Image (tube, rainbow, N blue to C red; front, side, top):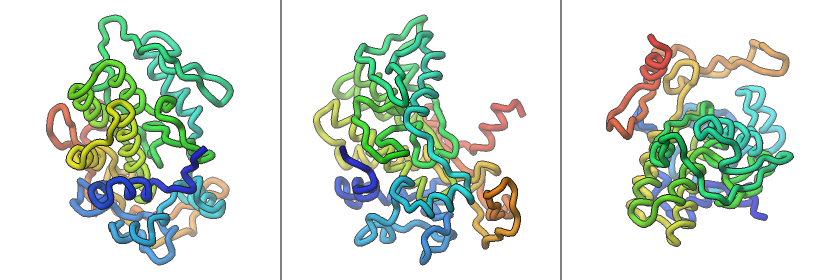
Length: 313
């Protein structure tokens, strides 16, 4: 069984598309620059620095690694500083199932849950009570503090690194793409495959996690495409998809709705036992409010404006 620890997402995407896609996935659409590292895990790289293409390619294709491939000390350090704990795929499946059970009006549409596992339901997904598959695909879904985006796509299990076959994936993007595969062919599949991407969102503070999340979403989308059409997306289509992902998965301080404001560490304050507070964000007004894109309305919006609207303010 393939394992993500032996073949990192950065190397996987570079092996297929070389320099065509990675520079797009490094972009911060709010600032117009590249996303920041926003972590002090890398000794010779400042958390304030942008992630540059040259930093992660060449002899550094294995530099940015998923959590499961990091040392235990590095995992513990990120847990203490950012409360970073990744969710097993079977729990992601249960939570995504709960959303779909509520929307579809019946249980077990996509799979049957087992003991920390699931079995794929081979039957075509049925839509009742006037609901359509197109409406399901266009439903907006967001994974907050998304890490490597395990709720969006389950390319591998975050707790052991083992790859999951395309047909058995359970992320909310995977489910949308399954529905498209069951209902569309040819050019219609291509159209709705892209719309599946356009309706999936996530944000993350740490730049290396965000890059892995973006790559995971991109690669899973291409793997579904190849399974359906028998070929990989061409360079132009791949770049268009990467642009959608760069908009929809963005770097943000979830407490402020703004881009990270990195300051020197100050680890003197402690809250819960073993959890450090670094006070890195500083003055939130010094950073920009994060922009996201509404693909159905074809306009940019700030994340904070959408939150205010949802809260009735």
